[in-house]
View (cartoon, rainbow, N blue to C red):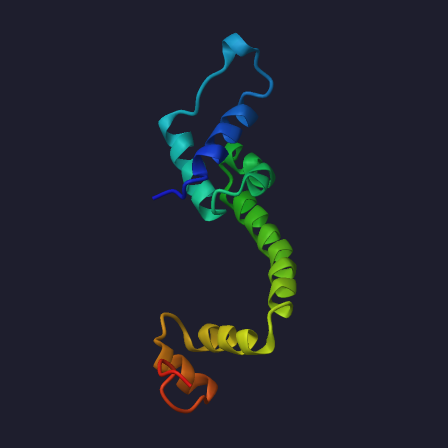
Length: 125
């Protein structure tokens, strides 16, 4: 199921693909293109800015080109997320690291064991 903001991306993709047409010549996405657009919108979480970066993916049938675009996007986003993680307090970084290395989902008890915390993590004090 597409995220709520996916509709915003679909509107953008329609505009993008019709950018060289006059108003009376505008053609909405066909079913195949809309399915591809919805999958892309879901992949990017409905983010309109990322939709702008990936709009050309809708026009290509070349899987290698699409893979290259997605790899480049992942590389650019890696720096962004690295900075976000660096901004987290130390304890939060440790918990995130334990989740990433140990896998998800994890209960509070499992997570406490991974980070070496003693006692029942759900009990107060």
